Image (cartoon, rainbow, N blue to C red; front, side, top):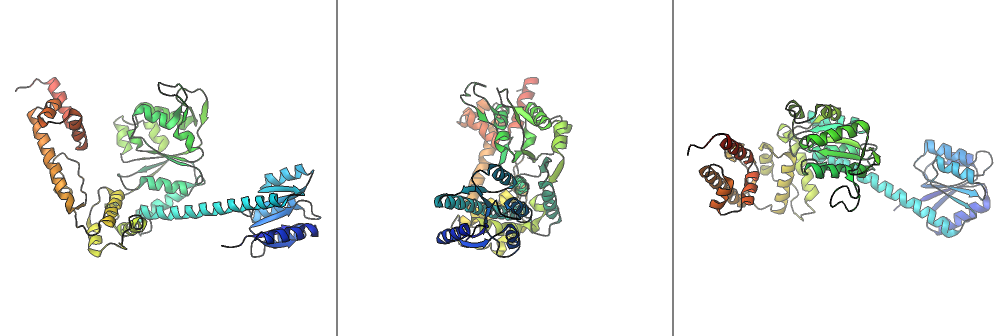
Length: 472
């Protein structure tokens, strides 16, 4: 590790001699100058000091002049002010100009050592954070598939970087699993808010009341069970970024409140009277086409226009197959050590299969498949050639690559589904009667219908039966 270099700028030879001996004995490198002019000249030379101990009162160019110059040409170098007792006003001015700390002469050895150690530790942490941000940015590039020659993804990267430094809302569109959250984090990481929190709220995961309290928080006594106050995600995000994921699923009532919050940039907690200012930048994402939702009256048009300042539509993986090798390499590197896998890269034949597969679950599906391969590399995998070979009528098209051991479970699932469907048809879609015939609970049957996406059909039949008498 590099030994920190400390520049001492003081016109007092005794003070320079003392600081040099003490800092050298503490393991630091030192360099000395005896005037403000020489301090400015030394800053143009190499090596650059890691920290400057700067006396305020020097003839000619004083400490304030040197500090002002430094903040223009070397703003990252921390400065500790050395001042005599009774120069409070000068110290305050120096702190306003950006000095990291100050010491009043005379000071104790321990006081000097603690001040320097704290500042250098903050520098180390700052460098680590910057390094992690660079790594995260590179990782986000790879997880988005950015780095290939795909024109659409290159353009998306350009737009994301351009809008990152602005505060305008961004609406991110795309199928499930294409990397909408990754792109949102990419925008946050490349923005001036990168050192502030990134908050994600899944608008589809919570009912209206819970989502409202999740976003805006509540005060004590706002409702039964509110035994203490709770800040919402907008408040916790501070000056950072908040991602409203799956915003197309938000209820109309909450859409109206969100619109007012975005317009007025303030809100109050549930049951609260104090107004809270919104400082966070808002990003939104959805796999729905909001224009269609607006046309159907399911999504507020004014909220749509408020969010739709910048729109980024991420293409599905099947439309950018050239990204698959990059993504595979990234996920193998990312998870190989975690799963203690011996796999260094995917076999050529498996990569060819990956390239020809449609990946309806997009990058998330590819990532999970590679995880499974790293854990069980000796297991054979089978890929359905088309969605129609997998999906039964009215069933969601999963189109998943499967290990051969999973084929039996998949077949059993299809057989169970067909049995439930036949039983429901026999009972004219009376779900309680069907559950009794199947010897399962009504709740278990509802869960199966939900998993197979058959709730809508059941509802339609019941409504028809209510309006049309049965002929049986």
